[in-house]
Amino acid sequence: MRTVIVDTLASIFFFTTVAALTELYLAGMEPREVLVTRLVMVPLMIVTGRPYGLYRDWVFVKSNASIGWSRTLMDIFAFLTFQLPVYAITLLVAGASLVQIMTLLPTTAFLMILLSRPFGLYLEMVRGWFGVRGV
Image 1: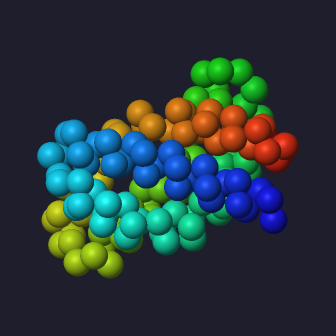
Image 2: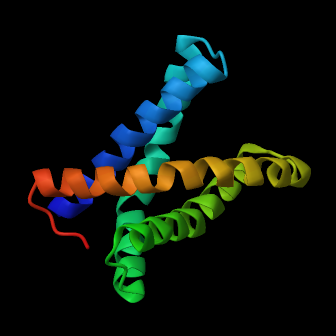
């Protein structure tokens, strides 16, 4: 149960911070808009936090990634193959058109590539703080 809590909270803290800063400083959203957007996203992170942690662990075990560059590649692979479909489904549910979704996915994939290893390292660090085992 502790792993569920740790993985979920790690996802919420990391992505809320990164997304809020992006929305505030890059997109120019008002602080209230950022707050509302982040509050809307918390339930999704609660649902996907631990499943992503499990999936990431499985990818690492199956790939036998043990050195820095291979672990980076596996973080990218795990993140893209799990989170990009979640994002696409979220956009669809939110009412985005297929054209809009297909326009957003390549840019989002690029950003996910940039965030995948930092999040993987953060997840491992938080797990270590709480004595939870991952890969």
